[in-house]
Amino acid sequence: MADPSAVAVIGLGAMGAPVVRHLLAGGVPVQVHDLDGAAVERAVALGARSVASLSDVGRGAALVAVFVPTDEDVRSVCLGGDGLLAGCAEGAVVLLCSSVRPQTCRAVAAAAPPGVAVLDGALTGGVRGAEAGEVNLLVGGDADVLAGIRPLLGPWTKAVHHLGPLGAGQVGKTANNLVHWAQISAITEALELARRGGVSVPVLRAALQDGPTDSRTLRELEQMRLTWHAKDLANTADLAEQVGMDIPVASTAREVMARTTVDDVARLLADGPLRACEGR
Image 1 (cartoon, rainbow, N blue to C red):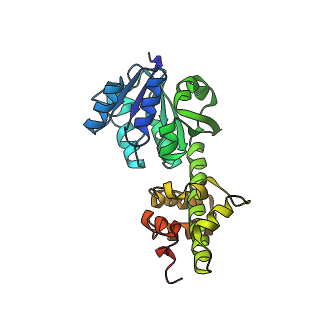
Image 2 (spheres, rainbow, N blue to C red):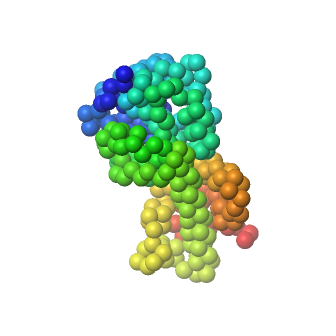
Image 3 (cartoon, rainbow, N blue to C red):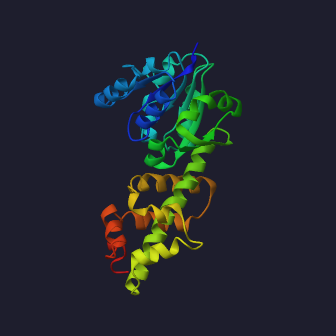
């Protein structure tokens, strides 16, 4: 049977590693698995226990949180005779924290052995939210299962929202990502338009923060890493196709973000030209 006080974390990257740190600081026993030996060593130095085999990760842990980048990674980690699900203890909950398609979550749930539950728990708040222990968690799956693991989510989240059945968390994350990338596209274009019109970008940006267009994105634009937009907006297009919806805003954001870099944004915020808008 799973230990109701223990958490296993698979994937010790930019999101998983801070989660481990906050769990340990909260007195939660943690076991970890990652292909990066150095990342594992850092977690062990903080008090985590290393587990070498995926099929052994879920033994004895009430919650197994998966933080790997892609749908293919989630399937590789969870499925198969030597995957995570093969060794999960009865009563364990697998929480898929990656940004993946709902159908991937359903495929993992379909392969889960009796007594093992699967939830999708998409994260919003980014790396800075994870570092601060203030992740916003969008969850799909059984509400009673979620209620049972809520105490293990507290050390690393600021809010946990149950959005509906399995996959609903990923739908919510897709909506979140569309807003995120569309905001960045609109803000950078608007600032470039103002720059060409003769208004200082830093001055205008400060002015906009005192008006109704203020947003966290506007305030923290220079901190945005601009990673994963291609994957996020591809997932948006996939969902839109499934539900039969045109998504012109997402299509525009996909085009704009493909040619916008961190250096471009830094140059714009310093009152220089945004190359993504050159020739337009």
